Length: 71
Image (cartoon, rainbow, N blue to C red; front, side):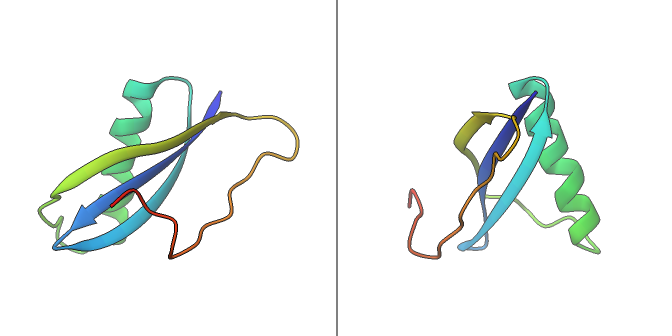
């Protein structure tokens, strides 16, 4: 199992999405599902970028900073 960190761009706004999944394909599918849960009406997504991928083990995590982006 892996922990994925995605950066999603919607109307020039950057959103971080963290997903736990068994494969890259499943992780991208789960990003869409999580976005649908977050928004009343699914917005038009400009870009979904896989920013980081880590094996899940005891103590795995991320520190998110507004200054740390790939854009």
